[in-house]
Image 1 (spheres, rainbow, N blue to C red):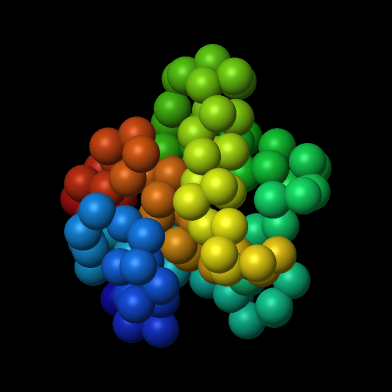
Image 2 (cartoon, helix red, strand yellow):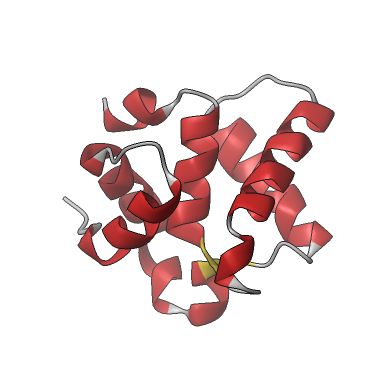
Length: 110
């Protein structure tokens, strides 16, 4: 089981609750990418990165069928919510908030 404890406080600061099992699944999914600072964060100013979040996380892992505009709006909302984090937003927290937005935390935890 992946250890999500390092991300718990950051997630709790922004989420409506905390689903440890879902957080552990996200950490496990990201795996080795979390060791590298560049891949451990999301840059909301990088449109290529946001496209990857939409296609690989939203569509790929979460299986979301919403329109590109709907997914982009949700990603923008998470960027806005995490604005206090500055330029480097935790990828674990970011992915968690996207999953929460679309009601997919139980899907991840299950």
